[in-house]
Length: 280
Ligand code: SF4
Image (tube, rainbow, N blue to C red; front, top):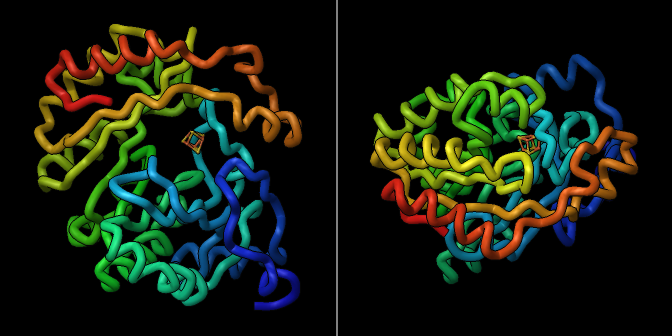
């Protein structure tokens, strides 16, 4: 490690901290090598003490780079790989090691999220593998688009997949994500089911955008039929990431969108529950 990267703290108070270009610039060849080998990852941060990114208290690594452009994204500073801090795998593993005993004692775990962690699939799988070897529960939060990058064996080293499904129909998926196809996401969910890998479905509820009952019904029915979905989580939209859109000069279409009411959240949970899912 050179220059400022070595001294940049990996820890953020929360993923809602705006963090861009905190590390040294990495040349194109080194980026390519990093992506191919996973010897180095690009991270927004690590956070500790999360109770919402999988079971128990979690340490979370937030990676940079994402191929989606969700209208409701609360971390647009993670969209670009080069916004992240370049972190050698050993440094990331060493950081996680600090918490290993505590996480095991408290039945917590490690989650890799983003951004989209499978944009850096080799780094993600090696870090998850290291956590697994430490005896820590492992989870990946992903939009599923690049699920095929993980082999069946690699999926066995991940205890839980938090699959963020943005929509069920192609039209709505494109609307929410900036034009992205959802066939690979659906295929990944099916593959996880065929392999019997535990999955939680996550769905962000945005008034006027994703509060579409027919979408939730179809998604819920699909997930319930898979047989491996332990839980469906409805995540209420919020505006914690609004300032990031503004600071990055991005066109934020949801600037005036309110949070969903508790009643609307309860109604959405009920839609998923009615399909036979454990919903919350
Ligand atoms: S998939 Fe996640 S990180 Fe990527 S744009 Fe959507 S909400 Fe943001």
